[in-house]
Amino acid sequence: MGLLDGKVAIVTGAARGIGRAIALKFAQEGADVAFTDLAIDDNAKATEAEINALGVKGKAYASNAADYADTERVVAQIMEDFGRIDVLVNNAGITRDGAIKRMTEQQWDMVINVNLKSAFNFIHAVQPIMFKQKNGSIINMSSVVGVSGNANQANYAASKAGLIGLAKSVAQELGPRNIRANAIAPGFILTEMTDVLPDNVKEGWYAQIPLRRGGTPEEVANVALFLASDLSSFVSGQVLQVCGAMNT
Image 1 (cartoon, rainbow, N blue to C red):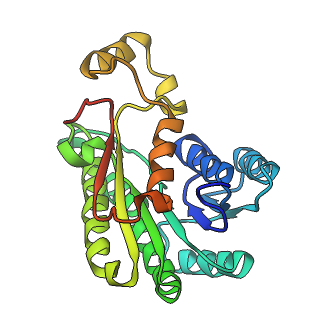
Image 2: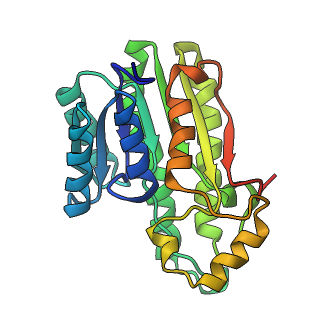
């Protein structure tokens, strides 16, 4: 018996990194998983194959999550293919870091649209389905910088703070229909993005983390599993920081 047996989950931006770890964790616990990425490349196909190899249904969808109409289309297709939607993980995200004085309007708009508007798009598309089911769990992937801010990441931090406000508002608005919404705020997580950092930079990060190491995508996925499952049936409107006590 898995914690998510019989459930269908959508994970956005899941071809690699944290999103991929969440999709695989959900599949291991019995969920059928629909996941999206901007394009279905070799990474997405490999993730799809890994999900299906676990004995559940997995399918990748090309999706521009920042596009409202495209999101409505993708969710309708997922509903047609899977028949229900129990869990939504808004994980799609990008960075375009820079100092405020040098940040372009395009850099600001891209990050807000991909990171924050995409979550609204998907929540808007799935909420009537969850309404009818009188059940659902929505998980927004925020960041510790959405809680505390970060120099040279004003656009990213604003988008991640927005995801927290969105989750808290949705939790209050949709709670009467037994729909829960929470946010996860990862700290320094070891992914392909951080692999390219020099060792001295990583060591500098570790020195700021009381657990003296970076987290793994699987450790973030475990928290997402908790929020997606009935283990967290009375947890809603919360922000769970997965940061090794870096941000307390």
